[in-house]
Image 1 (tube, rainbow, N blue to C red):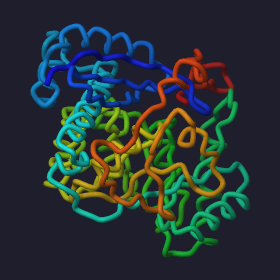
Image 2 (image 1 turned 180 degrees about the vertical axis):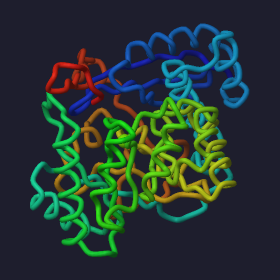
Image 3 (image 1 turned 180 degrees about the horizontal axis):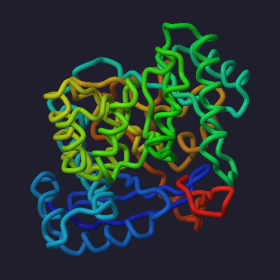
Amino acid sequence: MKIESIKAHPLWVGDRNQLLVKVTTECGVHGWGEAGLSSRELAVAGAVEHFARFLVGRCPLEPARLWQELYRSQYFEGGRSLTAAMSAIDIALHDIAGKALDLPVHRLLGGKQRDVVPTFGCVRSDDVDELVAFARNAMDVGWNCLRLGWKEDAPEVFEPRPAIAWAARAMTAARRALGPQVTLGTDLHHRFSVAEAASFCSKLPQGTLDFVEEPIRDETPSAYASLRRMTDVPFAIGEEFASKWQFAPYVERQLLDHARVDICNVGGFTEAMKVAGWCEAHYVDLMPHNPLGPICTAATVHLAAAVPNLSWVECWETPDEALARQESPVFLDRLRLDDAVYPVPDAPGLGVDVDETRLCQDEPFRHSEMPHLRRADGSHTNW
Ligand SMILES: [Mg+2]
């Protein structure tokens, strides 16, 4: 079997762009992957196009070997754009291998370790009462882990201190209303300084949150070590990490409590399984990042099925969330939730396919940017 072509398909789905990658083989089997570097899809598409020039003609059934070549063949190893492209290709190669062997992808990873994949539900509102109501609706369907947040429709100005005051009040009220059973967290989207993140955590009564996601940026592990000394709320971090080497200091220094591995950015199945093993050795569970479309979800579910150390997969299908990304007619045979869990799929490959006629006709790529936020004084701050 040989790779015949590799093509990147940037397209608009629902409320954002996605970058899908199709790998075809000379024997007619094809696979799909997705890259996760949102808002820089065309840069990743360029990397995919470059990689295709030396992958065509190669054996698609050796993804680990090709991974090494993709990562190490340019002297300047790594980098998010390149590993996002590698992720999509690696996922597509696993899809091909599964189809060629008539096995679901998790069977290529050692087989399933669970029958269903638990998820955490994302619940968002700017109104505390509505946030609690949405959380209750999700709990009624079966979610017992929720990530609470605020809407981000068109923010322009972000001031940390008012946001901290609102979020601390909202989280405290939610815990009081929802009781002690449900697991609750929030995502601070790496918008805060160490002092601000510590201040947020200090305003929460003990036991309010079971995890806080990305309180600060991740370039400097010692900054997380500093924050670790200032709060005992568990950290959920790692969705931006683009290799096992970025996870390494966080895992080895016990700076992350839930590993937010993103299979579409970290390097596909090949790299995500290594991260999972490293985390297992340190008694850390994966809590995979899953913000994209059905191909990302399917790849994430296969990964989550095959590792022993899993807490919850991120899920955007709570009753009060729009489903535009998942329910686009572009995708065929997507994985479907059973209440709040994904049954482990048994179809060959990923179990998802794409209606390519719709790729060309209905969903063209749109130039779009993540919000560029500024402080009240005019300075730039993180989205
Ligand atoms: Mg996040």
